Image (cartoon, rainbow, N blue to C red):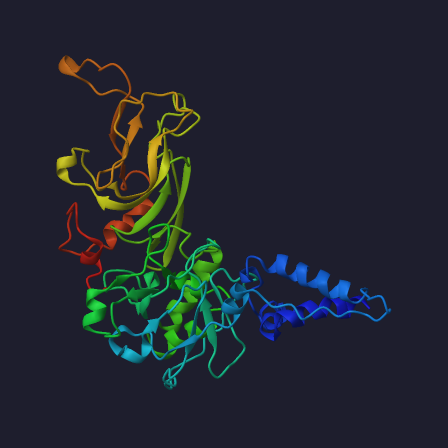
Amino acid sequence: MYLPALIRPLRALGRPLIDFVSPARGYNVERRPKNFRRQFLGIHRRCHASEHTADESGSVLEDPPPIPSADVISLLRDPCFDIRTLRRGALSSEDCIHLNTERRTLNIRLVGIPEPNANFSRFEPASESLLQFSGFSTSDTQHPKVALVPGLDDEEKFPSGLRGFLYYWTPPAHITPLAGEINFRVTSNNDPTAGFRAGHDYKIRTGGRWRLPLLTLAWASGYEPLRDALLREELVDADTMKLAEALGHGHKLLRNVSRVVHSFHQHFVLDLSTQAFTFYFLGRGKLHKTMLLDLCNYKDSTTRPAVQPFEGQVLCRFEPAKPSHRLGGGRRVVIRVAKILKPVRYAPNWEGPTHVPLPQQGKLLRTFVSSPPLGHWRRPRPGPRWALWSMDVDKTHREMRVLFEHQKPSEGTTELSPWASVFGTR
């Protein structure tokens, strides 16, 4: 008697939703609508009450079938865009995606991917993920569908009017092929050549680029159609895919969350009130996990305050230090604040000095040092000192040497080399 009462609200929400929440079909249970529980319980109560409601004559009154909300319908029945290639040079106007309204998911279907050659071997992941962090795929083996979301924030949606192309960025020769990723190129028209060059990569709410790294799609469930397409188009070879699956699954790397850095001028988000930041430095066939502590605070544990001096959110990037920075010899890395995402101010409970300027957009990040500098006649100057944050990668945090290994020979120590100069084909 209870089972029909449980099934009826699911039928009221529609057959697609039953498929959507079925773990046996391989769908992403974590990506169901935000208000799904409230709608389900509400429909369940109405359906259950209808079995016990009678009029004065004693006949049972049936409630009208509940109508799902527009959010549920739009989420489950969004139009699906056919993608014929992920290779940038092969894009056509038919691969252009154009949203006429804001959407939580971007549904794509891989069609027309060329058949594999004789050397093709289907990639089988060594492990299965229980959660799908970025999308889900259907069980349609002929034209599998993948649903992508903009970010981990449930409130974030792809905006209305968004137009552009999905493409796979292949790293240049001086960068490891493990750094490849799928991007979304925003364009003003459906021209895959001139429009693509004049466009820009789509950015999510946090300020970073929307991207689906190879280290994520190689191991997370729900991306099988994308893995198959990359192998079929020979954008990624089987050995690279297997290595990416092993490294990504070993560290549980997530899209747009894990700070995977392989080159200078890559952007990453920092919350200045956080003490410890986890970074993954990606080299050729290797991935190093490291922790950077107290970016702006004292480095001496005996004098370090319990709280961080600043609060706010900034978009940053690593850069090679210039000789003019006077940081000493060796290969050193500095951090530049590319953009202020959330207003920066001194923390209310910060008890240290407040005469030092706040981190500013376009400026290098500064930090406290534990020992004051020597002044005239080598006498120490009173009070705490601020200096540029820097790291000598030949002495400490040697995993950061991959940043220099992935430099272009002509790049040198140019302070303001834009991201596009490192990846000029983007």
